[in-house]
Length: 585
Image 1: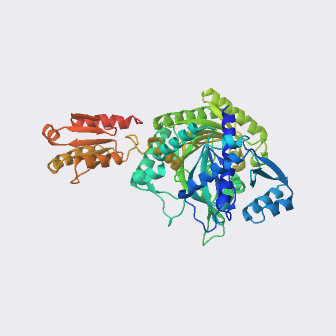
Image 2: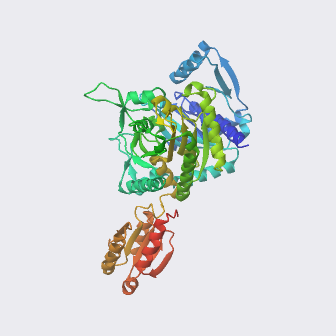
Image 3: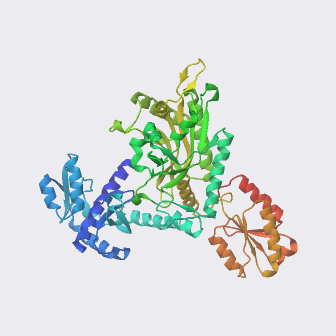
């Protein structure tokens, strides 16, 4: 039933993208249409408006035209065009001609779908009762988008919209969007001075300001604490490597277009910024002979990684070009795999519970229609995919299937976390890999004295620290739990005569490693409270005549509730326990 809902919603939104395109061609006859797909909970259309600049101020006019056109549409009809006919029909649109040539090269049919007086190049997938259905829509935003996502191509205007079966569903969705804006990590990141971007440095390359860098470090320390307890060993690897390494691993052939090239003035060797850690970790394993007595070997790595993401796909911290992962690669015997994977899944569960993330699991397997995309023996793939199902069942983990989402060397057990908009992002992953050990010729000496291949388990918990930061910021809307909050306590003296006492309280908190700030401005108390509230500090300590005289503090929580007065020692004891237990509220 859920599949049917999303399928029908896609058809509705795809149909509405045609309606948007029809309105645009009537309002701006010289505009060149390109592509207008359905996306999750909506649609967009990329248009070349020439010298005309389109903003959201134009939306009421476009929506009015769409409402005018919709009642005249009774249904969609399709027609298959011959090659010359297709080129003639779209002779004035270079974007459509480019698409037509690609369709012809693939030996596929060129089809046009029409409704009313509007026709568009399209593969199909529309609703039937248009006049009754295309009524509850809204245009949401406008953005720039390069044609085919390449900076080498022309910048187009992308108009986003959404369409729903009923007005109530549309209103509910718009309300959710408005609420989600309050959680937008890019907005909160600016408000709380967590991170920034610079055009002088480059797109997709985040700069962590002191507070954001602190949160990032605390997350890594949390992961490392769990890993150390499970006998994981942290290593560090260089950020560049020779092409030969990636040729052996298979990344060169499968991933080259997503890798940054590194140029040397003193060597002709082809080199890359590394997009992942696993090939380098294989070289640590084979740095010397290995015995079964050493296994499992667990190598964790927080090094930076780089991927050449398309400009149109960059999105705050959600998709960047420079990031790090809490990566780990476990080299073990086949008999040790179950225990190692169970430990990794349990560790992930504990960490996600502490962070309070909503998530579900996806079992990412091969695309049966494209076997050429995957390395290794198909029989081994069959074995590992079935093995992954048993592991998920044994750990009582509900999951959904993700055909075609496997890595080119192994299936994956992927944790999909939900952001404030309800979108899913992959964070954690566990992969049982036989391909890399084979390609790199990894060996250990078994109990019988023979050389055997280890199994390589790929494991990450947060996955990309940047993406985890994005979800964390949006999940808490910047109101981080105290253990993660850059400023845990703000001291607010009511008047200047209370400042000396405030300084003594500040020093006591600082001496016990509480992250504290003192607001010593000559401002009214309400202004100080408002600013501390906007900064989303965990606690405010308000100090006035009563507190000075009784040597106490009055606590104001982020929620606005007041507690106390009580001694600073009681407050320190309470907050230290909250931090130590990593309470996520």
